[in-house]
Image (cartoon, rainbow, N blue to C red; front, top):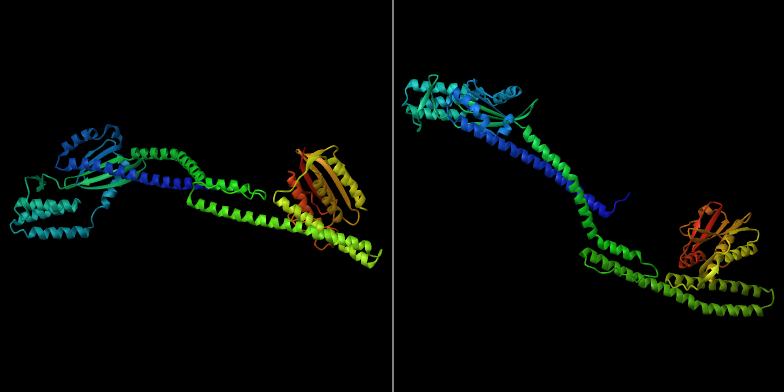
Length: 539
């Protein structure tokens, strides 16, 4: 099944729009997912920074855990879980709903961020070099501070926090770095009351219970871990995706309808051109495509087609006029020749060689007169000016007369007929008689030499009167039904020219039939018989 150009444009617009809509949906889903995670990360980081900015004991974290669910939105309590531990691995607080399946994966993630031993040793040597250069400190102060550094590295405290701790300790002890403040003792070592800036890491971890967004935040005081269940976020994404999938078919349908409508309006000039050209006939070559407001390309096409139609009309009229003029001009000299030959035949001795020669010349002149008459009829038919003297005629009688003529001139050829009686048509009796005579002449001329037959019929079918001429023949499978109605075409060019045949009879017959609103066609062509059907509208 072939698809119209408008439908192709509609389908193409829907296809490309669907592709764009799909890419937009995927991109937008990715963006809102990223934005959702970023919002959760900021909320988790704000919770961690507020809770770990100072050193707190265990009672604080118990109280913090009680108020944790009041800090977050109550509608999301089941999504948020908290774990707090100190740098020595002791648990300070853990939510009741903390997913156990998440613990080993979080531990593995934290351990994956641990530094290599070589980098730790190098960092400790750098700190030792800085501390030992502090000549204002006593040796026991330098040893104590270096021990703090080693303990903090052992507890996997981040470098920036250790650096901050060393700077504050040196300032407090009277070393070269400036700053400092009151301190507190922890395990025999001085630890700053204000903790170092918190370092944060975020990761999405999947377990059997679903996907979790985990924030790991820590300093030299605590490790603060928040886990947020992403089911709520994913549910929103699924809801948006389902809405997009629901809306997409309707959007694509509207786009296809819009594309087809726009294409129809854009191609409206093509419809006007096709409508005009479809009405161009030999008798209506004056048709022109109307000029209208259209795109530049269609205006150019309209001008080209109108110019072509103008040249076609001019050439056709010249050819038709030449044929008609030539046929008309030939009538006079041919009539003179015929008269002279008739006179010479009368004057020549009876049955003499001279008389037979004049008879042959007269036959050729009569043949030329027949050809010129047919050419004149064809030129008039081409110009749509074939004169029709229509009157109500009894075509049943005409068919019967044709059958009687066939019995007389067909010789050994068997003739039969099946004629519906009293059928009348409005037609030109002379021209219709010419058609039936042409069909009968061909049926006799191209029939079999032995056991030949002709069958003449007259019937009614679908409101049309059908006169049929069926005849036997030889090698009829070689008959070219596409060319048989062409002018000067002869079904068998190897045959000896006989009578007045010039390959114009069927062409003229079909033009006469069409001028009456009917047609002449070939039916039931087999290897042994052929049927010509003349159809005419009922009176």
